[in-house]
Length: 347
Image: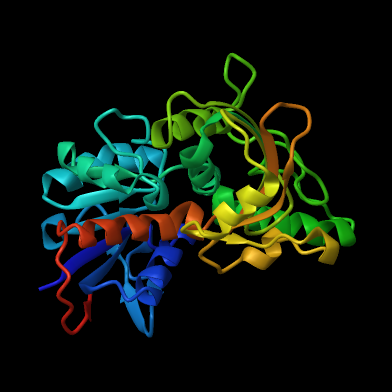
């Protein structure tokens, strides 16, 4: 028997993407269950060419599964992840609830795959913030080669990072402007249509937002606690795809040409960079792709050993669902999960 999986939060943006990616990557699951809140009982979601009916989170027996991919928000995860783990299933959680717990590994497989084996302390593995995931994939090969001492990053984050409600708000506001019926902001602090908002999550006492704090602390935990990082996180009127303007200071010299060669050969990265041909990637072009795209690699002349580059990724994929499935694949490769695939049944 191969691995039995439950996807918690199956009716949300990331939950549906988790099911899509499990199917696309032919993950060897004998049984897949869609789990959501009580109000979603009986709702149907797609898993490849099959349809799954949703089970109620509160009544589902998690002893039936080996692995739970959880994307139901921090409050639910804080309550339910320990219960599910106690039932014997490994939880891969997409929320922020467990990321900074010292006994829970925070994993991006291209960066710190060995950390998955820390799951045994609590039977929980944390998925990083979507903006952090693509950043550390881009930083890893350069840090391994010469060391990175400081990162300055400005993000341009799509509304899908705020869920379906965020996407609906952008759509409704955009339509409303053209018919002189602009809705009042509900999800975001200010109008998002034809605007940018330099606030994601709440403000902290030091003037940074919690999203900016997450990027700093998660990068340190995943990649290297010695790296200094400062971020400005901005919500932009894009449906899917997070972009980042990244400036790094390195411990030693590396030319832009050397960085391009290194990045081109690194796992999880697609380099698209030719200024003469105006070749670079925008968020619209990355939607549906698995890669972290890097463009506009150039020397930063304001510091001794500096580089700047543009980084784009589908936040619903690499920033959330794909990374979670890659963690599951890592557990599979290390023998923690069973790999023998039989005829798939659905719950």
